[in-house]
Length: 306
Image (cartoon, rainbow, N blue to C red; front, top):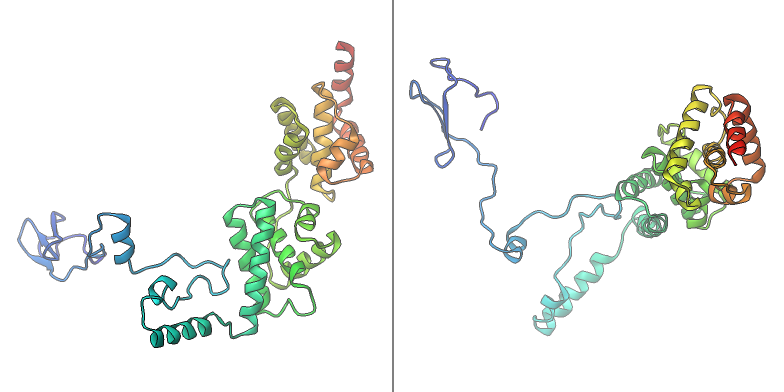
């Protein structure tokens, strides 16, 4: 059906009848056949069970960057089908399968190895499919631009993974990506900055609030303390205390203060280990929050109650 057919060109009415069986559009008022070659975009086959649907369907899965050929590769026969053939034909098709599985270009060989590593890291970090797809897309672009030369494949995979996490606002620290990939933290950060700069990828600063639910769960804090920590971070953002400071340090210090206020005491070492920062960072951020947000009074009130 054409999109521009909205009213009858003869009488100007909009009382139209769409006859899908004949492929016609007819005006009910004056009887004019407006369109006699209407296209049916529906499927022309019927399916009664999953097996018949699979046999009749002529399309495959959507394209994906997580496979080196984007999922567009074909397969020369199934093994079960090939064993039915005679020996001569069977050997011929086995040779075809072998040649088809051979990868021709250097980029495809690199992608086949790198994307399997990317899937492993993504599984270790428990990332959603959208982040894995974005990381694979970034790595593919990096390979096509020749950014992998002179760098280890694993470090570029880790940098692409961290960039994808930042773009999708999935809270993962450099330490976590470093642990999952086996690459040093500094190398992951260096590669991440290089890839984002060369590919002109816009990455917004991390929000400390994104890290609080995970850290709170690891420290086994109550929802009340978690809400209080989020409130402290929001107040700190209004006072511009978060600019120029690491988001994990702010999130950890806010949880530490919130835990003190609500009587759920956690040591600085425990909070630092969960947040992946040092105890010195916790102490510095803790002092800044107390001074600038006047949180000392709330802590004193709690001590008086005790």
